[in-house]
Length: 376
Image 1 (tube, rainbow, N blue to C red):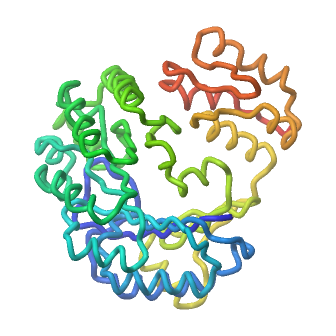
Image 2 (image 1 turned 90 degrees about the vertical axis):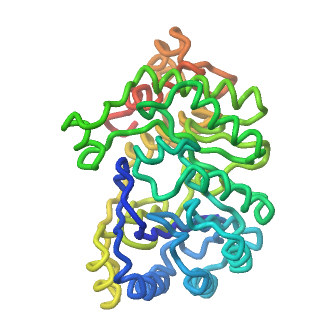
């Protein structure tokens, strides 16, 4: 089983914190659609005939595509790949793009899961982030979507300057009141060369407070676990049986094909990433050439990626898997991680090593400390 990700690089406006590849110009959208259809054909052998169990339209803002364009892409995928009958097909959508007729069209096109970028239900937060939608649209979009889709995930951001714990709780309580099946929550990250980075360096906006972010993350875990949600990955929570199948496949190391400018792919042995330039991407595909760089992964790189991704999940690191796949000694690995067990950041549960609630605050640092420098 494998997945396909499609990067749709168009947005109405630029969010201050975003460092993904996108453009606010729709000038070349028609050329882009033809190019991504062409890339689908060029990449048809990349996944080696594996059945496709998930398709994910990300970006950018995929909800800017017309229904006709979505159908063209889905039909092209169906013609080039074997798509599972129960394939999870996700569309990222902004609240201001959601209307009843669009929801009906998306469902008829084959979309069966929505990822809605709410970020906050407070107008001042949305303005601070330079989001394209308003607080009223945030709530209305969910009310409109619920009758049409039973598989919806919502994105929220915490740690925003001005977001008090009380406001953060109201954001989460709104999601709980609507019985959303899935929630992805991210700490506001100041990425280099973004408008937010520049504004902070110019002292035009308040800097991020790491302690406040940590506090709001721990509160989030408490609220959602009390409400019966499964904290199955650092940033992701779901009701039982409603995990994101697409994102879970990344953490499980399954193969995936990335289509579109800046999209990444993995076939089990190598990584591949497309050029992050729309015009060069389009021109290259028109010449029947995939504009991508490749890297063959070493055994050590695969081992370290497993440590990094597995540690972020509820199941944690499987010691038997480490030994069978990478010949890593359980005793030596436990010795390396012992200081985190002693400080209650990691717990051993039978054959698995899992982060504790406090340990989740240090997930990236712990993983990096456990990385190997050479193959075992």
